Amino acid sequence: MTTQALTALTFGGNSWTPQFVQSIDQSLCIGCGRCFKSCGRSVLMLRCLDEEGQLIASDDEEDEEYERKVMTIAAQQHCIGCQSCLRACPKNCLSHAPLSL
Ligand code: SF4
Ligand code: SF4
Image 1 (cartoon, rainbow, N blue to C red):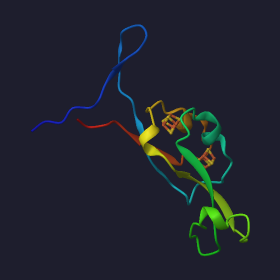
Image 2 (tube, rainbow, N blue to C red):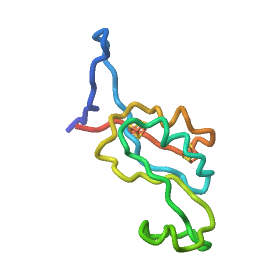
Image 3 (cartoon, helix red, strand yellow):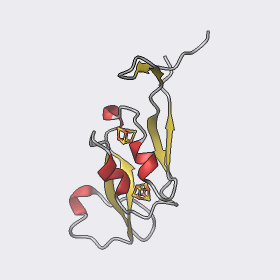
């Protein structure tokens, strides 16, 4: 069975294949927040890591000391595949892929 990628149309009627966010390489991420600011869909969220590289629970972030901040995918289901976040990232952390039908 062949799979097909989800495609859309531009305003001018040309075919366009959305590329949806899949992952963020947190070893590269410097927590600058540029991708977050570029996303109009509230998909991404800056989170804190402890000294062992584990995410600190959101509720504890204000109380616990953290080692560094990294971007995470909080609501992938809201992604429209625009790749604005990829273009904003200075470290090339974000991976995207089309949706297979
Ligand atoms: S591809 Fe677009 S909608 Fe999806 S996370 Fe990146 S900026 Fe947001
Ligand atoms: S733009 Fe890149 S380096 Fe900056 S927070 Fe987003 S993923 Fe991390």
